[in-house]
Amino acid sequence: MELRDLRAFTAVAEDLSFKDAAARLGMSQSALSQSVSRFERDLGVSLFERGQRRAPELTPQGRVLIAQAKALLDHAEQVEASVVDEPTAVVPLRVSSISSTFAGLVPRVVPQLMKERPEVRVSLMTLFDTHVQRAVVEQRVDFAFGRLAEAPDGVDFTLVAHEPLVAAVPSAHPLAGRERIDLVELRNEPFVLFHRDEGIAGYDAIVTACTRAGFSPQVRTYSLDDVAMLSSIACGLGVSLMPYVSTLHAFDGVTYVPVADEHATTPLSVVRRPHDGLASADRLLALVQEEMRTIAAAERAKGNRPPLLPH
Image 1 (cartoon, rainbow, N blue to C red):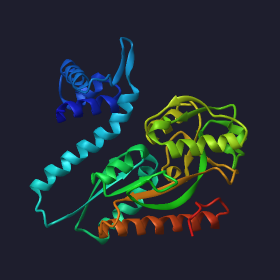
Image 2: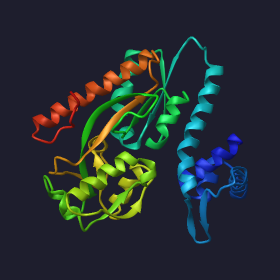
Image 3: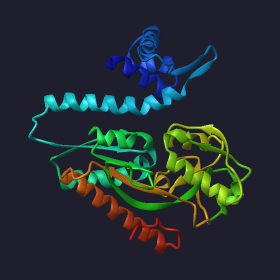
């Protein structure tokens, strides 16, 4: 597996356009296409569905690979940096995050950690929940946010909170002016969601909440991350249910509306290597827990549903 081919695949997967990806990488479109095709031959699978008059789409194998590809490229960059930097000058901390915590939580806690401990060099990457356990066990990640509700084998697991699910609707939508809605009011709305294999626990939490309210969500659009999901909602393609921390990130054209159903929640958890003794990871977890307590207290004071914190 060649890193240049992996980078080519990742660029096309992110842009869903050979033309745009080629321009970003500074190479010709034909050279990029050859690189991706070579990568597919090496792996023995098709990574994209291609058509003459439509954008390339990731195959199921491509969706699985994209999370791993980003992690591998991040690791390669870290290896290169560790050769260049003075090894004793920094303490590396490799943090993986799902898109919802990237949007609303990571920017609140990581800068505080870096301010307190300037010797810590934090690197950030994206991993789907389904890949977190293996990445931690293989020591490619030190600290991983996720939506797991129970501890997987071989890792240190901390349940941080059960977050309320919040409706995300186009700002022009009739429900956008409401202070609160019942979940059943979304029963006839098209939904924008991620694929289940990208986050089983998070996906199931949303579907279970809708089922409890008496309907199954009609998923019309699938998005790879929060930015794509919110953009689709802003364009009027549908609505969604999002964890509370996602709503801390304002997005033009999208309005967040609290949901009255107290059972509509999704877990927020952290996974680490067991007994790793990494003080910076311990401190980051403490900062996350402190931030969630602060958020819960503020929402409770405003009369809103706060995140539910474990005792």
